[in-house]
Length: 175
Ligand SMILES: [Zn+2]
Ligand SMILES: [Zn+2]
Image 1 (cartoon, protein in one colour):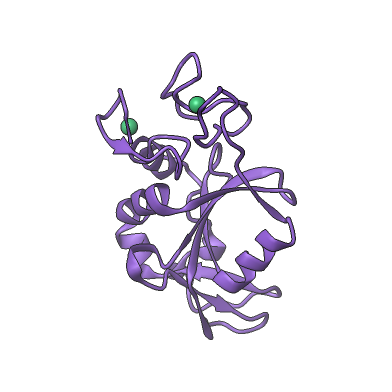
Image 2 (tube, helix red, strand yellow):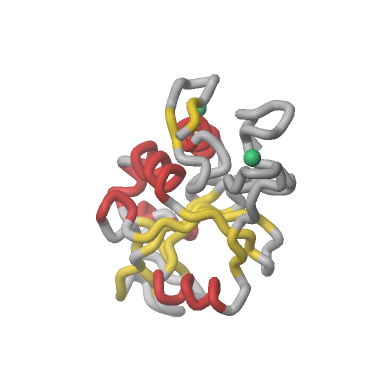
């Protein structure tokens, strides 16, 4: 466990390359965090494409979900979008969203994983099926973070860097 100099929170550098509490605060300030197409407040409404929405619970308890995801979720690099994301199965022990088939105006099935996409820049939330996300990990669509190049250190590498948060000149800087 390491201690964040900004907020005093202790966290596991094997799990998250940044302080989860500070990162969650940064995510919450992102203007596109919940896009209209993923917003349950827009229902019922149809679209000519499949989409997923988050639950009202995620909207109401946004801070809790973000901090939980930042603390317990897993980081990946999306080779398709060339951006980092954080995947969290069953955040806070609940189902975070549902899927709306093309042409339907209401959700018809549950989505059991929460994803913070573009986690180092313009963060936004969507839900994804755990089975589908995991098959994306196996196929290489989502790649795990690397480990610190400092001898004897195997903490997660801060995205875009070769060293972990501790071994960088400005240790706890957010993305
Ligand atoms: Zn912090
Ligand atoms: Zn290190």
